[in-house]
Image 1 (spheres, one colour):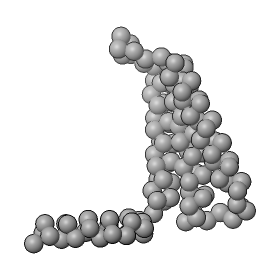
Image 2 (image 1 turned 30 degrees about the horizontal axis):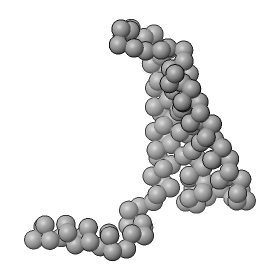
Image 3 (image 1 turned 180 degrees about the vertical axis):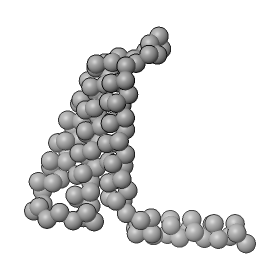
Image 4 (image 1 turned 90 degrees about the vertical axis):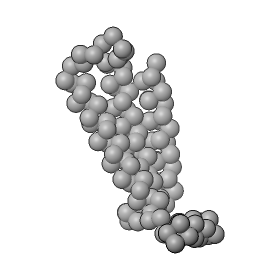
Amino acid sequence: ATYVTNYCYAALLLMDAFYLLKSRPFKFNIRDRYYSCGLYFIFVACSNIIAGLSHQIFPVNADTSNEPIFYWIIWSLGMITFSIGTFFFWIMIGPICELKCGSFMESISCYFNKMEE
């Protein structure tokens, strides 16, 4: 069943978040990648718990197209929490210019500069 996978993934993410947030003294700084990664894990875990609930309570197949409004409320809430988690993921990886890729990034910019000429 799909909901079992959602619950297992949520448990794994919560364990990862607990390990990350426990490994350092708690001084919340959004730019610290440990905390943004931990918040990413927490929000994606919440969205998987909500997805597990929606899959468990409302099993959907091709024959059922008339889901109740409660299904759409739960589904929307899961998408919102996943979107918040994605926001923390983008904070975690930071701007593309701060990534330490070295010559790879230079070769890409050199490639696009040659295309413009």
